[in-house]
Image 1 (cartoon, rainbow, N blue to C red):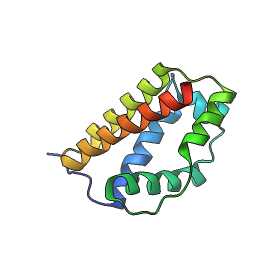
Image 2 (image 1 turned 120 degrees about the vertical axis):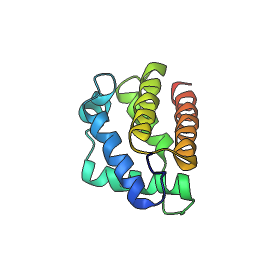
Image 3 (image 1 turned 135 degrees about the vertical axis):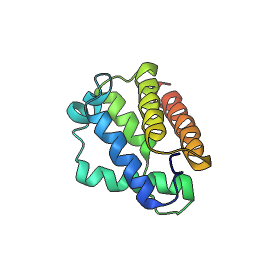
Image 4 (image 1 turned 30 degrees about the vertical axis):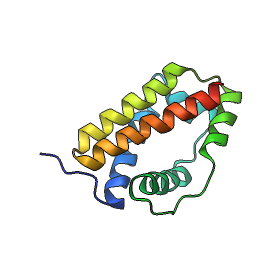
Length: 123
């Protein structure tokens, strides 16, 4: 049996594993590598804070992810299939590493966030 997500260390494990997959994903990896030119040393700690806040209400995240994605969409058009792929990879990563109430919660929240972002970004 896999453990559930319990703390920041688990969030870090999940986020690191997820972005390792994303960097090489044939459908959406180019957004991160070629369009946004993500600085991973800077981006990953922001994502740790984001997901820790989402799952454990830590209040340690500040930023505007919606604005960042809208700017990215201006540079290279995103489609519903891009968001669907992001959700698919996120769910696979969670399922590879964890199971339990928090694992299910983070998957549901990821769908809700990605869906809201998709509708606001794509109009």
